[in-house]
Length: 257
Figure (cartoon, helix red, strand yellow):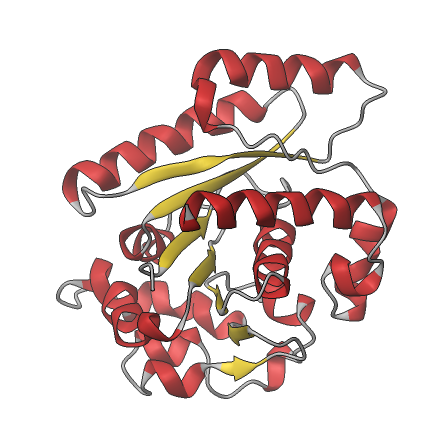
């Protein structure tokens, strides 16, 4: 079997569809029959609730793993989907920033935990917080690649250059093997010239690192998390489901060639 691919979904800018992308990419990979673990490393826990878990009642989460209170395997919950598992998160994780101060090798805690369980999965998708925090650094150190969702709007390029700079710093000092998995455009509105201009600008800057699956601005996609379902389960025939299925196929093909 090909080795596990660990993908961090990250953007230091909030509101770009980061968690939506992490949840739906994980679900679409599982739908393709790939054993997939989604690690929710965002204290907001929206990835956890977006896959049907009551985040505030979860006792075994990423937080307990980072603090060394439980084994990584004990924080993994089965989702309602075949081939999809979740390591949940909730607001407790926000406290880890302070509790990890002074801990030796603190940037490598998640990587060490992931190394214990990764052989059980084809893909591990990590949803990062929307900031360059200790937890985000942990995720980027644990990952093989970074998938960057970008909203098709004016300030997207500003956030992208900051993130690429941060990835460069992590690569230089903590994870030399880290690569950009690709850019995925989210909240695309074909009616606006701006969306098209943003895509053209990013293509000029990054060339081959762009996935051709573009995620549209879609009401059904926005509704799905409140039902605790990925879009492929909430409305399988919607434009949002089509977009994420295509992304899942592209990611899987890139890994399994």
